[in-house]
Length: 395
Image 1 (cartoon, helix red, strand yellow):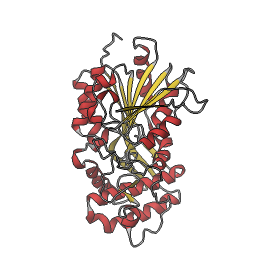
Image 2 (tube, rainbow, N blue to C red; image 1 turned 180 degrees about the vertical axis):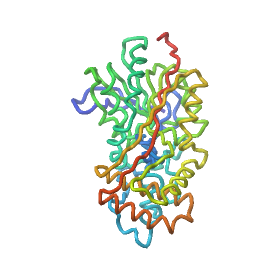
Image 3 (cartoon, one colour; image 1 turned 120 degrees about the vertical axis):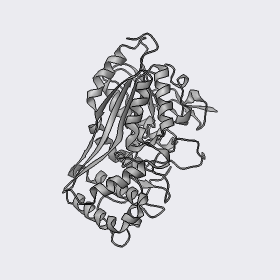
Image 4 (cartoon, rainbow, N blue to C red; image 1 turned 90 degrees about the vertical axis):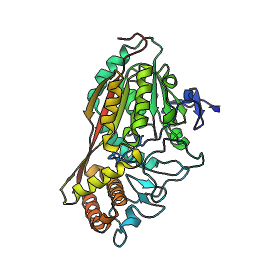
């Protein structure tokens, strides 16, 4: 069933009429599946957080609640004292297992990309996605924009660009990319969470790099139903902090849909599985390994996702370009760093409970250094641009 709503204005600016289509989750392929991201957020924190977008990421996604902000521990070290789990991974109300609070103990900290109970709450907290939007924007690979602009400039037809943003979260990808490319743009925002879709729609940019108009449409659905037909007429597919919370089959589906439709794909901020903390600590590597194992649960690809995606697109004739897109977190990002730390360590302990006793003082020490402005973190990600062979005669 498709419900047509009133026009949603791009913001800021007047409430202009833009057709918006809300497709119920589980709808037909034409109203393609909505992915939640963290991304931009992505489910990664950097993904270690979530992820659209973000779910996400060093990996994971932030879970939230519709209508009410999730309970998020503050940026300071807090009373970790006798209970690491209560602060970082143990209560039903404030669980961090990947990068931000998760709703229920033991719930996989990634976006729900498959069929779900329509009454399930959203999986991303807007607060987490807001915290990571600035570092996400700084991290994304600007070097991939020129080859993308060249491809978009050579697309047939002059009616403007149609851009599908998968797992749009609160719309950070659109706010970053729309003002960096020329031409009229119509963004189709996909996410399973209507709460985040609302944020994304009302906060979307109103103009492109050359002043052309930007309009927006929202859809809900399931990535597993993504087909070339669902992308008919698409100029570009984007996503942020998404690939690492997909399975191999889902990445194959995504690559097949994009290459079948002949449209390029810009897929940013996928976790690379590497984290650098300064000053270093003897437990850093052990926590990182446990976290990466957590990201590979249930058939998800985690830090292997970019390699699999590169292969999936290349096997279908696309030209693939990769570029590093690390988060670089210092004193100015201490609030985000603290949330990321809780998620990163929380996921590691969930994966390896035997780490708990040593992880408690480790987390406390890291949070204290963060609050004092003495901790710096580099969370490595990779951006991928896949230039599929066009199907409409473009060069």
